[in-house]
Amino acid sequence: MIKEIITKAQSDLILDASEIAELFKITLFSEESALIQAAARKIAEQACQGRAEVHAQIGLNIAPCPNNCKFCSFAACNGVFSEAVELSALEVISRTQQFEQDGADAIFIMATADYAFSKFLDMSRQIKQALKSETILIANVGDFSLDQAKQLKDVGYTGIYHALRLGEGRDTQISPEKRLATINTAHQAGLSVGTCLEPVGPEHTVEELVEKTMVTRDITPAYSGAARRIPIPNTDLAQKGICSEARMAHILAVVRLALPVSIPGNCTHEPSIIGAAAGACLLWAEAGSNPRDTQENTEEKRGMTVQECRRVLEEAEWKVLDGPSRFYTDLAPQNEEKVYV
Image (cartoon, rainbow, N blue to C red; front, side):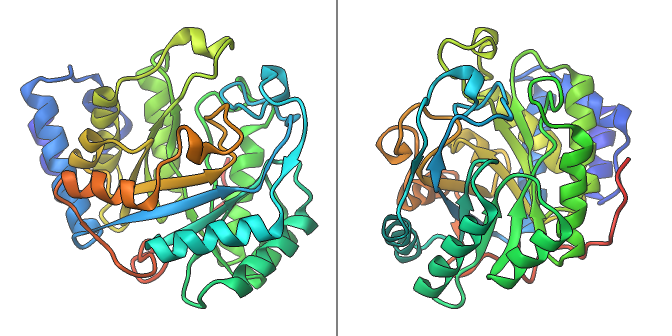
């Protein structure tokens, strides 16, 4: 049965929920798991036309966030950061220019959900002016309206990152409907959307993984993929543990098989060679704040550099794109306006 499902995915036919579930259930290090990962790698190479990408993200601020996502170090309920800290425009511009110089294929600008939108727009204008005109900018912010989506587009953003997270509405104080409405709004404004199956923990059931994988497919994103939950010390979710990189390699491979070839990117985070070997063709470098880190400047702890991410991909035998991201430009799938239920 597994070989038949793999063949169906390789033929670019849509897998149904029961087929995706069968792939997720396969035992690690079995022959079938190896076949799933090998097939995912081949499909990933076809989808991205043989060129992996390294994107880079800078976090503008740290603040005790009222949305209280239990997996996030910014959550007020987790008590990691008690005071608000913001990078200056000079600091942000310096780090984004370094990302650009290092060869990042796209640069993400991230802020907490309560970071003033007007301030985010002003910072974004300054960043855009300081970078090369061809540099791709992606916004990673909280939920927003259609008017705000259009403003993001106007200041120079090509797309956004947004996800309906595992445990949304249970482990967060954000409704799933609100997350999906923002994604639809972004499409309406002409912004490409990147997304992911995240944050994956050991306790998540096959049913949950299937449901959220199908949501990422329905979004028609520039990329999907899978990212594991990094435990925030002394929190309830930390007690549930962490998925191994080997397990995540299997999960991201299943996600790649579940999505059509028209979706060019397949990501994993944090970067790992085994994940890249199994079909992840997108990794992130990070600077500034990081929702998975307890360090104020993540480059001093968890965050990797662009060069380090490139080395991970190269160790997994990927060729890395030089130049602006293609996932958000010429390879990006055509999005139709959707009404999510």
